[in-house]
Length: 583
Image 1 (spheres, rainbow, N blue to C red):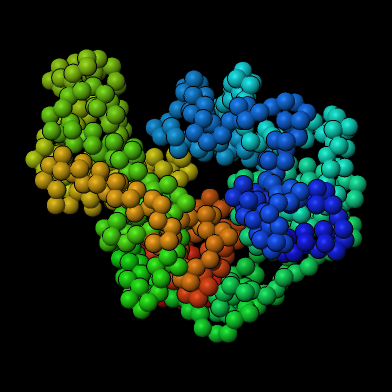
Image 2 (image 1 turned 120 degrees about the vertical axis):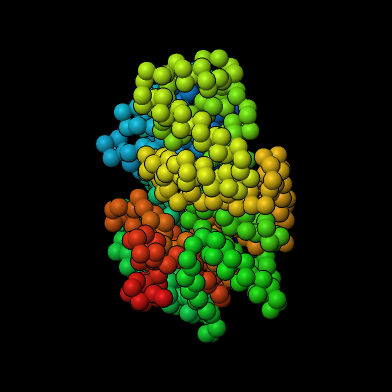
């Protein structure tokens, strides 16, 4: 639509190409939009500006303040700086990279005004520590002369407010502005857009409020819903014919999204004839779920379906681990925009390996300290001052402290028991006999996380130990698995099933889509405890459902009698049934 609109403006309305700005949210999408325009218009070059919001306002600051690419902080450099901030303030956790990634999102939310300081509940560090982190990060940026991508927008907005002359220059430059994927806009971007559009307000905005799923980045459907009130005379055109999905999928997705109240009402209908299918797969556990998945994939390939036209979607990146392991075991190629999780670098593997090395007789202090209180034994680090640990000396040192002596004695006995076990039994004993599984559950609860994610990783590591006779053989199996995962995922986009999260699937489409883990506390996410958050979770599931052109396969855990693993309420909404009637 945007390409046709640009052609109409230039060819019919005689708008100068240099006065047209087309904006989207990724450089790849902007480049793709430009290529489509050149192809359809038969041109080899154009003066139309195709850009991202960050690209436009980088140009604003470059012209006004003289910044260059050297001033921009992004990617790995930003994560390293955030990790350094946490370390400097003594707030670094056991997974520094993951903690830095969460912190990056939280800082972005604050800068994009998606949440106020009063409402803000950080997960990376305690709320009482976050102001110190925010200030220290800002200080380190200023000290180095760096800007992050959020600063490009925040500082451009401040510049426009402080210097009307510069703002007017940019307003005169673009008379017509078009925005694709408008539902992904945040508050700062929208305010900049409104200022840039003055005085003509010639805006053409394309988006689907039902696909607004980036609340953690500051995007909210309320912005899109409020556009007609912000621009008097704005015409709203509803595109209600779906050219992708079969009628069965369109009708089900319409039932699902109809449960949201904050949206534009639409009567979506399919342009295709009947021929789609939606199948439910109840499973007893994650292993059965992945077994059913791979059986379904192989059956489809046998009937002639192209494996590269299939997708497997999960809620979170950690949910990829069991799927990834099964695909590697079955030698099923896959491609993904997500980086395959490297289990050999995960803290859970490092903990398990530390226990196994101690059981094998290694006595390095750093190895013991890693797991000394995993689970909590209330043993102080000062008991082990030497680089080589001597348990006999430590037991002697704490002989007058009954609780401490008992805990250390139990650890020594556990290590003796582990020493006589093959890797699979050893991991099982670490998990259940030594209480490491319970430690992971408590660890996840302390971070407002779902313990099942950590336990899935531990389960994957345990399965990998099956049949191995030594730590070296076990370690080699893990290394081969990680290497094979990278090989299967690397540079083979036309040869494998697409694997990713629901967030990453937006904008893609496949003949067949498999969505896993459709249970309460996962889909919808356990932290979706407000109506606003629940509606975003429903929109995200809607996005996953509507990636399927023809076949939609939905997998969920059956209740186990403990009150856990309830089928998601979204299944009932999608199928038009009560949750208790879902098989």
